[in-house]
Image (cartoon, rainbow, N blue to C red; front, top):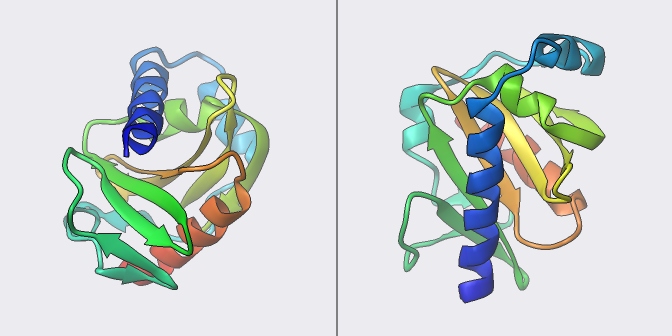
Length: 148
């Protein structure tokens, strides 16, 4: 469990530093990646995550600000951050930027895989718990659909 917590904590740190230091080019980074393809997630919905997202089930034993979902030995964490800047967060994705509904997934300079989904207000942060981003993208797409 400690590696899961460390992964979520490392993601939190990277996400917070991305939102704390927006750059002048951050809005052009989002524009360069293309517009999001769906409306922002309502903040109220982002705070009430579903018990299942596709084949992923919510781990009710977790603690802390992030909600953990598990599937076939993999885990993904989800956290809603009301005050986080979406544009600055997306600018921190430097590799494999993939549009997913109301946001983007990819890899940060710190080599962490992350998805930032635009919420109104704030950002929903999805952090895949392994080194592969493929299940993070699939999870994020399913979460956007579930939260509508």
